[in-house]
Image (cartoon, rainbow, N blue to C red):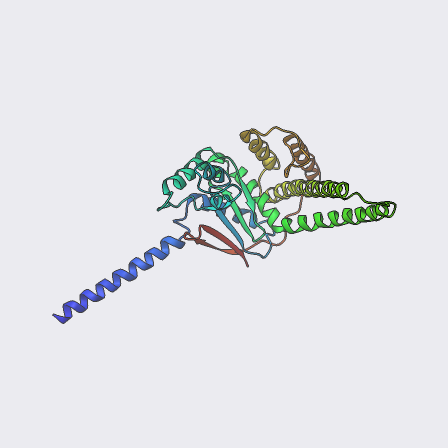
Length: 314
């Protein structure tokens, strides 16, 4: 009798181990990860064969995107200006509990109605909306340009460099203003308090306006640089030269954005951006880039629970 119990216990333990192992395989298997992550891996592997992607780990995460923030506001799931959390939720997960229906349906609507959206965090995480894959469909070459664009931002550490450049320019302007103010105050005899407060307020608003314009202008330049970088990166990897130009035109058209560049825009307007890419392509055609001697080899890891795919260069 004890023998039967022993056999049963061993069987239960074996089943538990198998279930545990199966669960771990499901959570980390790259064979079972969503097709969108498989597309990312395929494209990055191709880019890595002919480009130096640096030595920092690159994390990819597929999210519902910014549209979900808008839906979250509509469902009163968050307060104004406090909805960014929803844009980074896991779109492959079914949520339960309070407001589950609203959250799940918002994710569904974001997937159906949103367009192409991707950006990189300074920490090294590249977020791509799931709707991007739906909109681009079989145009994996356009997806390659989207990924290469964000990789260029990441490799060149644009967020830091842009911030540093903007602060240097702002500091220079502030120093000039201080000199002007000292000269102005030296000739003033009696200050009217009310007038002085009004002038200080106007000066503060003017200063903030200048800082914003500087920051946005540098951001636009950074986008042009990333366009150029993605063109070179994909061209080295065997994609036709016009691929990223065609991809950019496609993105603007399906988003319905044909406007010109405005001083407070973070990205160039349609005509300016296309013109810049055409000019760069023409120069690149006359002076083709050499393939990077350094091939970026590395390892991949997928975590379903974290909703991430990580490429770690060796």
